[in-house]
Amino acid sequence: MAIVSELRYPTTRLAKIFSGLLALLFFGLVSISAVSGFLVYQILHPPRNPAVFDLNVMMGHPSTFTFSAGGANRDGLFFPGLRGAPTVIACHGYSGQRGDVLTLVTALQEHQFNVFLFDFSGHGTSAGVTTLGYRETSELRSAIQALSTRDDVDPRHFGLWGTDMGGYAVLEVATSDPRIVAFVVDDAYDDPRDMVKIEIEKSGLQVLPYVLRTSDFGFRMLNYPFRNEPPVSKFLDRTKGIPKLFVSSDDRPALANETLQLFVKAPDPKQMARERVSYRDMSDDDRKNYESQIVNFFLLNMPPSSH
Image (tube, rainbow, N blue to C red; front, side):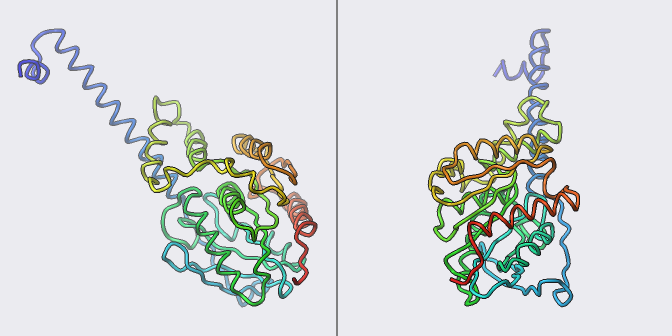
């Protein structure tokens, strides 16, 4: 009791110094926790600016297709191609939305593919909080299952395209769903925790002591149900025999390195492509060239003939 009393009301010089150090330590811990908590909150709640579509005037004659994901209904856009042809699902990236990939959809649809778009949780028209890939993977699985019940698509042949967060979901699904016959991942990552680190480093606050470690801990606690989820690279060998294209962007070096490592670990058949800038920031000409490359990949490995 005397020690506690001395710490609360220090009388000696040593006790005052010790009490001051404890106060500084406590303040530091609170500050680091507050900064880390704020960063994680910002990462899991990216800005949303839902695109509004008038289906009556949109090219490609899309229709709304509703499916259930995580106990909630999700509205996607289905762009019809050749009846009975395979379907390509385009998965937008972190802080993006389905409207970001409409030109890719047009390019694929023009070559008779069915194409499907939807917004992941916490993005675009979808409410909720993003998990940077954990829950998004199950949303993609739900979309595939729902689409396979349509009578105007090939229920056994799907192609996937995804960038960063969407790329992670694509890899996860491709390792476990035999209906995936070809896929493309652009600036993908191995584990959602990697994306947390990348986003914090972008903020510049990683220079503060323990911010990275505390933020990682907070993200893991918020996603506790997925605590035993291994990196996607652990099961990449299951994609043996599936044609796959990995794309990296020079302007996103951290993600480009992750993508390269995934490519190295992936079994054949596989291809690697490199772009100067990420898909979202490409000029019109660069985007056309990129989309032509994606279309040709699917035409070669999943031709849109009716099965």
